[in-house]
Length: 70
Image 1 (cartoon, helix red, strand yellow):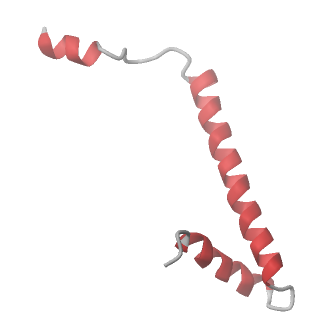
Image 2 (cartoon, rainbow, N blue to C red):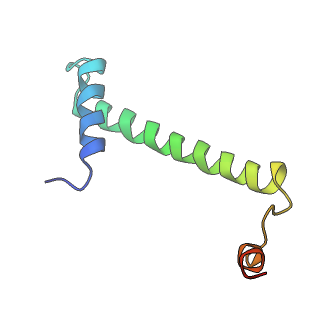
Image 3 (cartoon, rainbow, N blue to C red):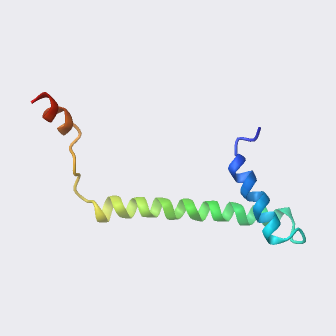
């Protein structure tokens, strides 16, 4: 079994969508680029939310246990 079944599934859909005339390499390129762009956007959003939107922590590391223990 492949370690990347999701990537192979997406590769098959890209291959069918791009038409077999363009070939497997075009499908691999399209699928890989789409995954890379998704990851770039994901990490950009996480950085934006961490450094810009939520600059101060809402919960200190030991705050939960201080409230529980009294």
